[in-house]
Amino acid sequence: MISLETPVGEIAKTHFQTVKVFDDYQIDFCCGGKESLERVCQEKSLNPGELISRLEEAIQQPTNAPNFDSMELVDLIQYIINTHHSFVRETIPLLSRMLDKIEEVHGERHPEIIEVNAHFKESAGQLTMHMQKEEIVLFPLIEKLSQLKRETKTITISNNASVNNPINAMMQEHENEGARFEEIARLTQNYTIPQDACNTYRAAYETLHSFEKDLHRHIHLENNILFPKAALLEQEVVKKN
Image (cartoon, rainbow, N blue to C red; front, side, top):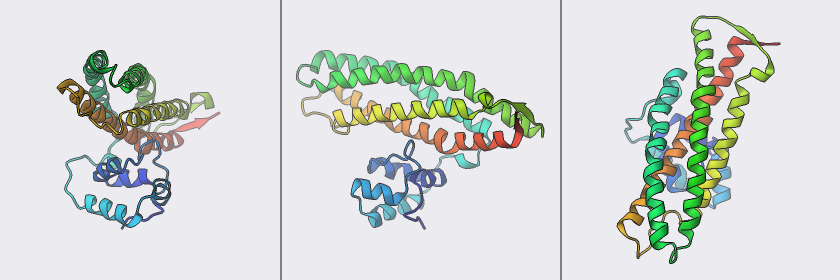
């Protein structure tokens, strides 16, 4: 049974099927994963019984999703790169072209698309740099910690070299992009397609919405599973001077 005291990120971590329900209710289970279900219901004026019922119904549904919480960290890192980093890199050029086109054609009648396009361009640049930092700095550091544990070795490092430093930086960047997409959702009235929208307009909004959903899952896997486990792993294998 789901308790109102349970953090939403914990629910998503234990039962990945529930992320679709959180999406439906626009509940932040990634950056805001530490919020309890009760607090979220209060903030959004939701019926707790109805939400718990929807979540428990989702848990009963079969899923093909891996058990992310039981994955080895090196495998989880590879999954994030292959699934989410690849999706972001592949989708950015497509979305940029579509948003440029609908801004050119529809920007006068729908000025909000100009702001949406500007926000997405900024997010695309920031996410590209963010993923590079993860792949070049943070992920190899976590993999090194995993190797040390497998080999039952320990090392000594200074506090400045702690894995928590890049983790904290990445989490702040997650917050920034989460807030940016909240603004995009607001500007688009939660990706509502205008009546006069052409096929490109429709495809752009649908793809943008899919991009946001993927970003939520991407951030959830890092904030609520990978990063906390990496911090605990460091405590096992590192002696700080």
